[in-house]
Length: 454
Image (cartoon, rainbow, N blue to C red):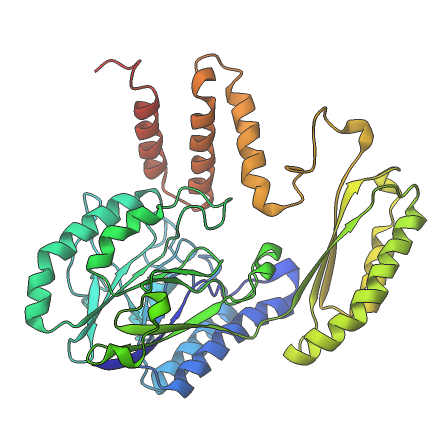
């Protein structure tokens, strides 16, 4: 069997970043470009591994932009298979999500396994009720499984899914299934330090025996492991942090189960497919750090900013806007210790300087400087909040300090700080109250085990 597909995730359609309407259009353009690529390559199907939309309650224009891309694929006879991410799920008061609506309109197949006792049931997808764990393509030779966002229950669901796949493996082989793909909306612990509560890499390993290609979403940083686990990253820049992950985009995957040596890359440990991560076109994000130490008055800071603008502005217009035909987003971080009152800075004047030099679609100057009069004893720059990747550590240190004030938790304050961080992530991911309570009960039982009577 020979086939090809495109794997995308985290398109976040409808995100009007910074309140700039053109940024709303950027997210749609990125999606449409990948759609056009799928059509030109004549792929057999396209996988959306969650978070097609940026929020659960979308407006009419967001829906129109989504259906425009999906309609093009439909007209090209390219099936779209999707799972729900944490941003796609419906509110508790709603009966269906917008992805379910698109499925009902035949724009895509939304894989939605029935979960019993935390275990996904391996049943074929049924159009009548839009429920089921898998769909077969290419005369039954290629099977696509899907597991939507599970939050704190992800690891348990993966364990149950592995057991279920083991139980039906002989039956699948007898049916002629030659290739198996699993789409999941989750990530790996530690890829982005501030995103916690995800499965570890070892949690995924048992699935490797039963799955040829694991298509992930959720974490916007691209990564891949061992020729079978792939995460393409976000197709547009959802935060300034993502601008440093320049190779984000989508995967174009070729499959050959009869003669895999024709396409595989042995250096990537590929088995039956070759996966190529391709960077799609997106608006340039330019980030600059500017130190302010030893600057004794605002005019000296303005002069340093002017120097940065003269040096980097023309260079950015030549290298970035010509290449992408898009004006950039410019973010400048002021950091260090100010020798004067920060309120003396003229924010509008600084932004005008940047606009004149870079001609950006949007400019933001963030003041992450410290006041020497209020710098805590022993406080350095390691966790000053300027580097977003260290926020989780800063937050955890604060939790640990607060927890340690209660003698009941003093000896386990580090463990409880991790619990609080996970609870925050669950709340931000809109986990249900029952899921959060269950997680907290389990952690409490584990940490207080010696002191809690049976």
